[in-house]
Length: 196
Image (cartoon, rainbow, N blue to C red; front, top):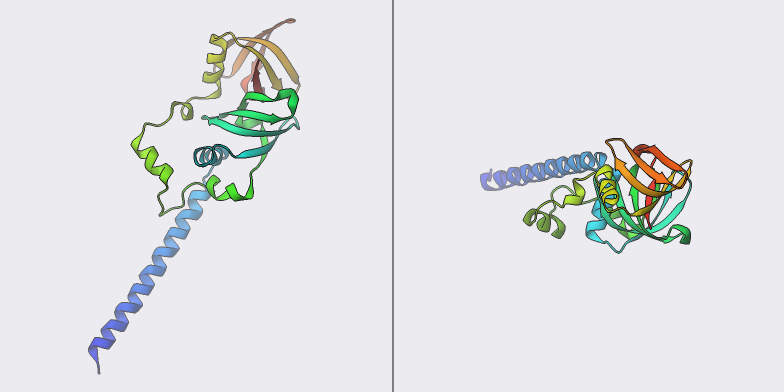
């Protein structure tokens, strides 16, 4: 009996089994990672890997927006709208306002982030820099800044639009002064805000 051949065969078999086990474990971890992805995670990954990506989305009020992401926050996105023309330009969009987002097929992989077991160039850059402030702040914080700057806005809700200035932003609502008076709006009802 050739012991060298026997041991070599056993080593090869063990190595194949360990490789298969590692591959299965990585596949399970990747499925688990993808199952936990949020819409925000996917939009953020798209913005970080290819900020020039043009997407379309349907909002809860039935509008179809063609846009580019400019920034993604905790529960909001800053977008540059290309279409429709009546709301073209910069918008602050509550992520809760989106019912669907269509991304180009060639961008699907980027939107899923970095697979388990890989490291992307973006990941290396993120390790060497501080987390971006925009990713930490919520919609209320952004709208407080708009209020502080006394910007004229058009707030879009499911019930229509209100045009005026934001006077104050609480934890779950905002006050806007329009030509017809002062109105309180729940932040959950704010689909997007046009800064005029």
